[in-house]
Length: 166
Image (cartoon, rainbow, N blue to C red):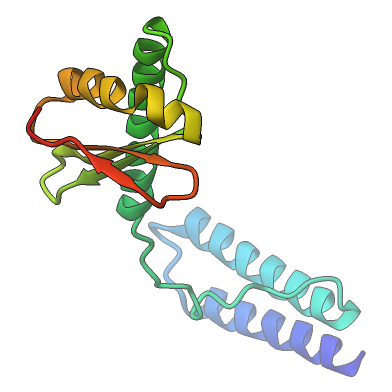
C-alpha cells in the first residue's frame, strides 16, 4: 500500500512542477489535458498493479517473425486443381463404363505460378485392370495431352502398365 501512495504522490509532485514550469500562454489547455492524462494513467497503473488486476503488456517484446503463406497457398491450389481434374476424369471414365478404385494426380506449381500435371495414376482392382486399363489410359491421355504421364496399376501395385506416347 505504501508503494501505491508513494507513486501517487510522486506523480502529483511531478505534475505540479511541470505545470509551474511549462509555458501556459499559448498551450494552456493542451498542457492541462496532457498533465491530467499523465496523472490518471499513473494512478490507474499503480493501483491496478497493486491489486494484481492487470499488467500492461510488454511492447518491447513483440513477435517479429514473418509468416510466409505462399507455401500453404500453393498446396491448397495444387489440391484444388487435383480435385477438379480428378472429378473431370472420373466423370469421363464413368461415361464409358470405367470405374477406377482411385485416381492419383501429381500437380506441380512453379515459382512463376504456372501449374502443370506431372503424372496421373489410375488404380484398378485386378478385374478392372484387365478389362479397362488400356482404354482408361487412352481416354485420360486424350484429356491431358501427350506430355502428362498416365499410368494404370492394380491395387497391389505389382504390374504397372505405362502408356506414354499413345
